[in-house]
Length: 120
Image 1 (cartoon, one colour):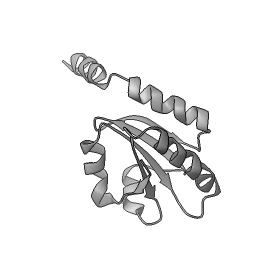
Image 2 (cartoon, rainbow, N blue to C red):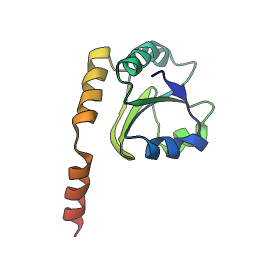
Image 3 (cartoon, rainbow, N blue to C red):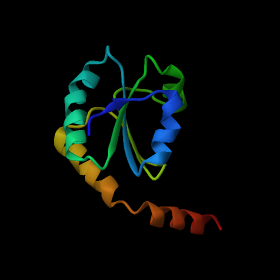
Image 4 (tube, rainbow, N blue to C red):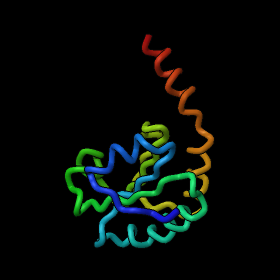
């Protein structure tokens, strides 16, 4: 599955309607963003069960501000609508593969249940 660009209008539905979503916040003038793009795209081909989306921070400044993006590229991972990873900086291919596997293996339901138990 290839990557696709999303806008603020698509963001919440994309996050909430898919099991696992990786979001790359980038800009066309950003050298590290351009360097990371092929790694992100290659990973998307290896994991058709994961949705890979890109947010152009120049075109989507309000979304970038709402997501508290302070540096680009920033990679976020969501599982079942919950943010499980948020880090600035381009990841090398092996680190991105490790992250994807960790997100797939992460038991979000148990984490949510544990969080709810702690709040009661």
